Amino acid sequence: MAIKLNLPDYQFNIKKTEKGALVIFDVLRQRFITLTPEEWVRQNFVQFLIQEKEFPQALMGNEVSLTQNGIKRRCDTLVADACGSPFVIVEYKAPSIQITQQVFDQIVRYNMVMRAKYLIVSNGLQHYCCRIDYEQNSYEFLDHIPNYANL
Image (tube, rainbow, N blue to C red; front, side):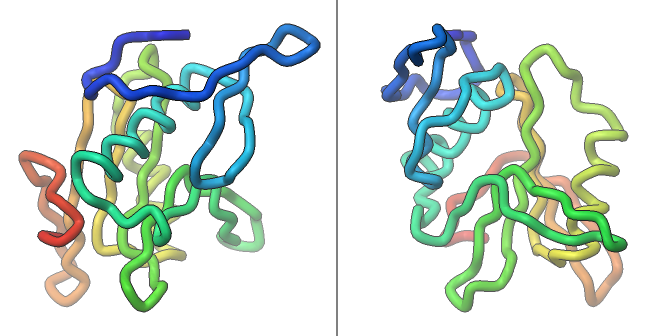
């Protein structure tokens, strides 16, 4: 599963289950998760945010539940601000999945409930970061993902 991503290399705890499936330890959920291509992107990107962008691990969660129009959904990674409010939502796709308008539509729908200030989308090869300005009712794509302290 060592698909090379457009991210630094990180060390992971990966093992094989009794049934032969590969699982990876998720530091945010504190348990082993089936290692799919999308999960590989998530685990690498979470490490990127923590190690390179200094995101506080204590303010991050994977597969965070939300209810949208009465339907239960899960956002891939949610980063809170110091007050515990949604601050950054990250949506992951497998490296083989292109980042399209549909992917952005999905994260924007989640954000209608969460109202985070930043949206990030990554397939491990391409990463997009968008800042939402609710007062001006606008958004801006950033040319990089800022460190947490600069958000």
